[in-house]
Image (cartoon, rainbow, N blue to C red; front, side, top):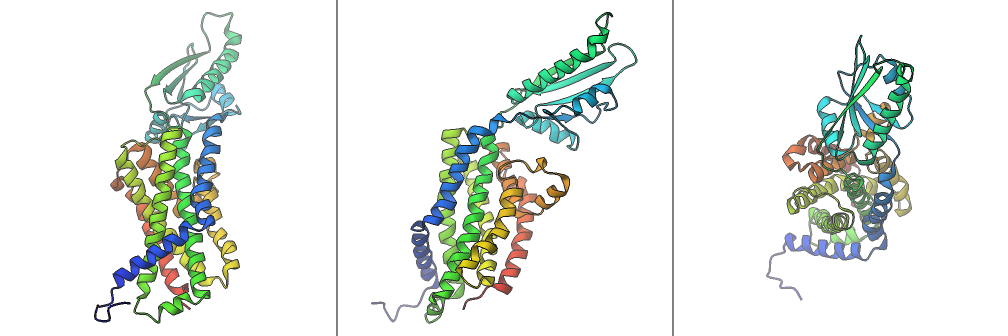
Amino acid sequence: MTDSNKPYSNTRATFAIAKASLRSILRSPSAVVFSLAFPLVFIIVFANIGNRAITADVGVAKTCDTANDFYRGLKTHQVANLITDQSTADMESNLSKGNLAAIIDIKKSNVPPYITVNTRYSTASGDKGNIFRMILTNIAYNANKPAQVGPSPIVELHEATIKGREYKYIDFLLPGMLGFSLLSSGVFGTAFVFISLRLTLVIKRFFATPVKKYSIVLGEAIARLVFSWIGALFIIMVGHYFFGFTLIHGATTVINMLILSALGLIVFMGFGFIISGIAKNESAVPPIANIVTLPQFLLSGTFFATTAFPSWLQGISNILPLTYLNTAMRNVAFEGASLGSVLPQLSILGIWFIVVYAVAVKTFKWE
């Protein structure tokens, strides 16, 4: 029995709702599957096959002479993927991380050797660097065949190796899996919960009590945030201890990733509020939610870099909120970036927050 003289506390009501909602989430098989099992399965599968790619991305220096037969022959090679649209700074960074197999700079001369190929590799390049080295050697050998009777070769190869930090596929994959988990939890979880509460008249019963509307929303948000933090911490620890996921600053990096997870979840919950408002019943939620989530799963750099897409598709990728959350996560985890350093990504998420919740206010229904 409650004390009638004790003033009603919406703070206690908020945490009571959060506690009940968290219990409901933990008892939901679909929540556990989408937030924990699916990302973990993807990590196990892709972590074991991701390093077996047979293409070698190669940066082309801005000073490289591309109007020669050697470059044209290299350009037609199926394994070598020549990248010309990155800045010098980006190429240097990607080389040191092993994202690029090498950087080439071809010089042309009027005296032998007529073509000098300066190539820089990184200790992080691994097998891809060796693959590209063999490609260059083979092309140079074929080019020098006519000159074998002469004293000087037509093509001469020069190479150097810089020290880099290995950027494993798990370092790319795991932040994408976190984004996958947060987007699933924020969109599907929120939409299903609020449409169910509305259709079963639970919210209507809430209105017969002193509880405020914001307590209902805030309680659900707290529950989903706690659950998502548990899932994120689980995924990070499994990735780090079993697959070597890089946490450049240890516990500080983990905390920063959890903060980013919270910000991302808040944005994605806005989509869930919109869907719960426009869906007529629970069966209408999955089709609408998939319209929101599937393009982001596929186009936001979850499984592979968006640079692999054609330019028109990259334009679409660059407006999706999950793209910026994934980028911020990767910068924090591997680069050791602070939260202040990922402000450009957080600013885009902030814009999405304003837009999504402006729409949610218009579409969300309590009854």
